[in-house]
Image (cartoon, rainbow, N blue to C red; front, side, top):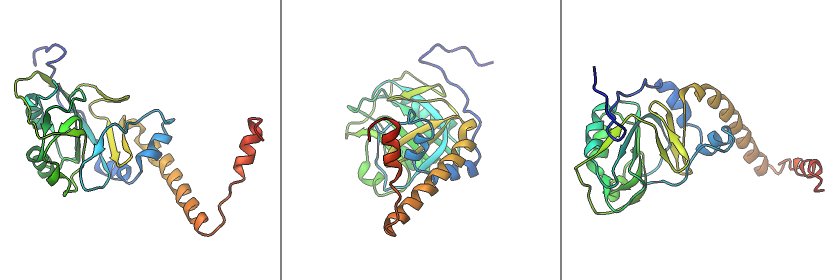
Length: 225
């Protein structure tokens, strides 16, 4: 039996993974539309993408470390699998980077789908030439400490976005969203329908047939006409 560890030292096994087909379907949907279908309450734009481009979707493996320290982050790599997204809460501090190109190269090599860092990354010249998804709050040349403490596979929060182990994390140039796997089917259907409607709107504009009659109806509804 694993001995009990207090808050700040918890080390838990990774959660059950989401099927690859589900992740692939979600990776094809913009975070803006996914957020719309969660009442616009879920998501953050606090972190920016440092990679060359492309969307990300994977099962969350979460880590919390002391600002600027990555000792426990290195240990947490033992629990990252193909199809996962590594989510690192480093307190939002950017004075010291907690990861860089070496760790990201390793994660890519094992089939990890991306990394999210509420803190700083370094080596961004090379990271920016690659497709491996990397979202971070900032960058610095200054490297990390390796003294601890830290914990992994516990709930973390980035901005207002709460991410639990096993949640699905989706990211693109607009930001990041996260939600439980039980919401995946509903979101794929609802967001897919909204995306198709928006794409039809773009075609309608190009053909000079965009219907804007809803504006008057909405103004009338609220007594603004």
